[in-house]
Length: 402
Image 1 (tube, rainbow, N blue to C red):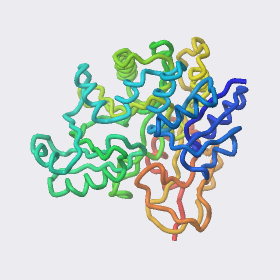
Image 2 (tube, rainbow, N blue to C red):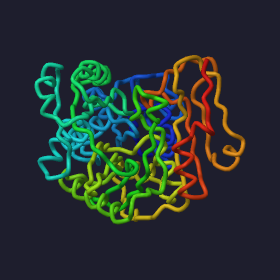
Image 3 (cartoon, rainbow, N blue to C red):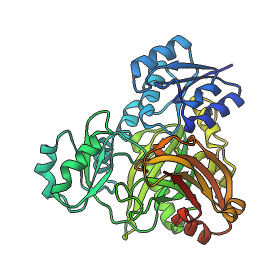
């Protein structure tokens, strides 16, 4: 029985832990929270912070694991690559994973390799950013260099708001660094989704439309995602261009075999901009809905890759039907009293539905996808219905908070 070390044990990792067990693996979960729900599904659990590379390496050595993997956890991806590289296990190059896991390094890499990239710079302090502020075209985005779930992200147009935006970003940065970059005026929906390479060749991609909280409902952070929808409604020639740019990027990074998650924007000249790249499967139920749409089990292929098994049978399959995931969320803080779903919506559109917050538990206003109160997998009869309902989802799904 092969031993697989899974970094993380929250709700996002449960499908992977279950799948690995189905595949006959002995599954060991590892993270800093012994109360995470995923641990009950693993064969064993170790209470170690997965961002501590040396501690995880020591654990992996002592357990003689056959593979190490993470799902939907940006902070764990460098540790996976580091440990795998040290132990001769299958993974992508550690240096490359470090680059894509830090926004300032990633922007610098993109610029050095002639990808389209907005003016961007990483900083440690307010004073450094103030010196450069007026060299940027407004508006600018302030982001932690090493955070996920859209936490700590702000869009500002005046220097008066800079300090507040930086303080907000640094609250979510383990490295205590932030990036300032020019805002990209984009067309259409943000392009999201998971892709997979085998021996460096991009063999599978499933692009989606990114949906976000409306600014009128959440002026604090309108950049937090509520869930992607499939298939992508970008023209085919733009999707092909995105595919080609991802392949060029994977080659430059010397990536091997595995899954990657992307957030991409396209401007009115059809230039492709990589906002984020994760060297792991995406969260927000992306692998789950990808399977509904294409039949391809990305989680299974990711586990096979981590164990060094053959993934050459994975091929491109176009999505069928209209699907989305939805991160159920509250637009205000308070005491959670439940979720109200329109009867017809529940009957026609809801495929899976799980509330992960207890009644009478405190909830926070939705400023990061880690603050969701539950999840849904949804299906639709057409692109028009899908986009209309996802863009106005609170007409059908209401979170009750007192």
